[in-house]
Amino acid sequence: MSDPFSWSINLGRWAGVPVRVHFLLVLFAAVKLLGASLFDAEGEGDPIQTAAWLGLLLLALAAHELGHAAAAWRLGMEPDEIRLWPLGNLAGPHPVPVSRSREAMAVALAGPLTSLSIAAILCTGLLFADARMVLNPFGLAGSGSGAPTVGGEPVEALGAIWLIGWFGYLNWVLFLANLIPALPMDAGRALRAYLAGPALSATRDGLIAPWMARSFAVLLAIIGVIRILFFSPNAGGFELLSLAILIELMVRHETRMLEEGGYYEDSLFGYDFSEGYTSLEGSGPKVRPYRENALARWRRRRSDARRQRQTAKEAAEERRMDEILAKIHTSGRDSLSPEEQRFLARVSTKYRKRTRTRG
Image 1: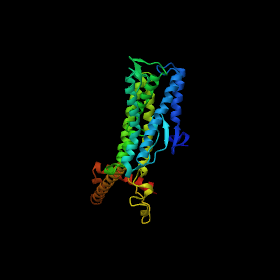
Image 2: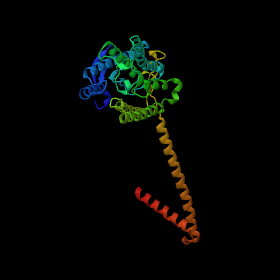
Image 3: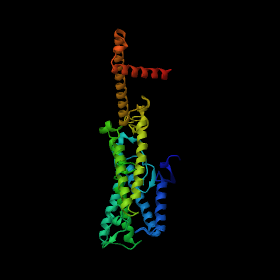
């Protein structure tokens, strides 16, 4: 249990898919309930209302993950293990199947599209009741409340319109959050599946996805700090800052995987099943050679260039030293210029230190 990404509560297997509740979802719910009990925050000051929309969040997460699972089953892929957290499935970096990159990308996008469809349907339905769903991801007027409005005013709490509006708002937030092209968001998984495609094989070991993720993490952190300093406590600043930190942790985990090699899977277990299972008889497992990523190649090239400069400098010093020694042999040491004497003293000292170190 040393890996914090694995800290979760097991809920068993649902339709063959392992389902867990990550501790971040438990922590998020506890903080929201505690805040609603201790502080009279606008739109979240009632613990019962907070518990109600947290229950709706669980339903929205279930629908979101059901979209992923349905797409995986439809395309004949194995659904991922589900670790529920406030924005979907907290799945870290894992090898991408190159041969099925398109299917993997479709499965990754199925969840956000499911959330968007639910939000669009409920938003349209609320219009028939003269109500408006909140479209600001930070809540009504940036207050953190997703309660729908009628005539610009929030509707009665815990009513049918209130529940429908909150459910639509939570699905809308899930859709927007999962558009961030960084793990653990769905757009981050879709981007990695896209980069795994055969047409983009040259970019597989690059740092395009981690750099993009880190850029969005910095942007989220800046926006979070601004909202903490200049907006209300429920304006989403702390959530954005926490998300930025989580993305940075994911990037570091992913970078380690890239440096170790073997981030993309060319075929299951290293075998090519394109010719059937009999292909195992004539070939052993394919061991994929280690391939440097872009950062490792840059470091190696910089190190090689530094060694070449040092070698050239030492060769030039040796030639100059030979010239000075020849001059001393023919004309004596007094014939040396002040600059040549300084050079002789400096190089002699360096060679003595090098000999002493080696000894």
